[in-house]
Image (tube, rainbow, N blue to C red; front, side, top):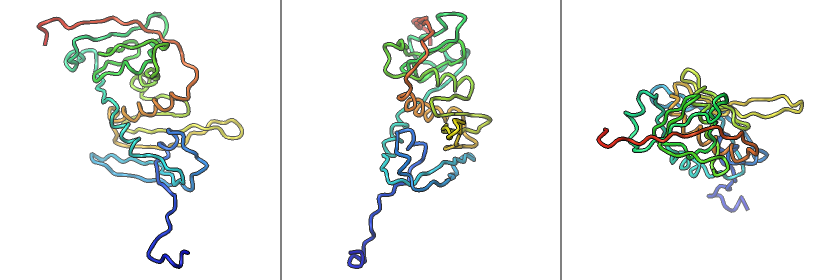
Length: 229
């Protein structure tokens, strides 16, 4: 048949997709035929190195990138500058309900455009639900990343250090030793610019987490006085 259709090329079901995306959406790693390292140069000296998989499985990359682009762009500011940046009439200040235990908020619905995120205080214009009333968990992972510039979520290790951002995937070898493979690496990469991808990773990784630590927070509500700018 191939000798008859000389002007056509046989279609092969092979797709190139970032390994990061494929793993996050639960792709079948057994269908990967090859892996290659690709480096892209961006503006302002940013370089992004990623592992790209050649696979026979279709992964809807445009849909993934659309989902990432729709994630809220968050401005993390200090306590001193929050009132300048926030335009909300009502804000919630979260502190530990049990004073000698860490502040812990699981609900991702707390995310707002402007936030203060520290170890002991989170300020947002959105109200956090309890873990029992939330179907969107993972905020404490994001809090750890903002405060410590590093977090492990399930099989994902995310780190930002001195304008370098990396995402690693954690597996076990046959001897139960933990192995980390870097699947995404960027230099001259601002921490704020990483937030959307970090939130996307958390949202996907959280779907396979079965056990969660209990909340430890209380909220104090503040309302802007009339006449205040």
